[in-house]
Length: 253
Ligand SMILES: Cc1cc2nc3c(=O)[nH]c(=O)nc-3n(C[C@H](O)[C@H](O)[C@H](O)COP(=O)(O)O)c2cc1C
Image (cartoon, rainbow, N blue to C red; front, side, top):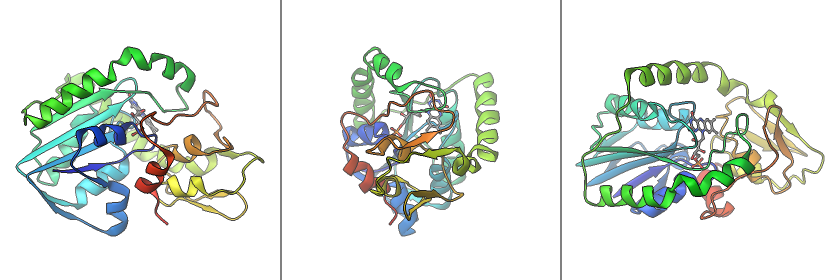
């Protein structure tokens, strides 16, 4: 079983580790230019971005040839995924993938412009993450055929929000960041950036291909990187994942 994942704060990586198989970081596959994969089972695990898919997940799936007998997709999200998985089915369909199983799992929301991480952490217990994850693991290991299906209203909402996000938000990155003077030029931000958008001379400098994933902000050891419109200064990393694993997954240098 091959499992392709994208993560910034570890939720999707934790799910991927629990599901198991051979894990492949999508940013690494893009960097290495690997675009053909075959196995009995192939899965994708990624976060919901603006009711849709992260752009790099979409681009990778579109450009790649996959061959398997059983395809699955699991989307992690923090509040409302709406029809995010619909986008995966659509993009997968264009790449010749017919999913046997799709599911979503509610975890801690890492989206700083909308939520305070301290409040999100308080809600973590009530999300019953382990219960839901065990069910997903069992479904996949017993090769269940099931799909998440939402209302037409939800599909329309997802389509319009994620196309707006695609058009605007990815270009906002560079002007949205504030770097404080306590930055030590440690380069962690550079190493966790999945699209090689950061370079360091004295302080991080941001180029114009930001995915708005917030990895640089969440993982800064000095808490020196901030969003102009963030709701809190508290940062998040999934308790079952270490910074080194995020660097290993995303480092493009
Ligand atoms: C740019 C961005 C957009 C997001 N959009 C949504 C969303 O539309 N719905 C939602 O429920 N969560 C949203 N989230 C929260 C993440 O999907 C959620 O926290 C996810 O589990 C993070 O996974 P990761 O730790 O593997 O990166 C968003 C997060 C980011 C950074």
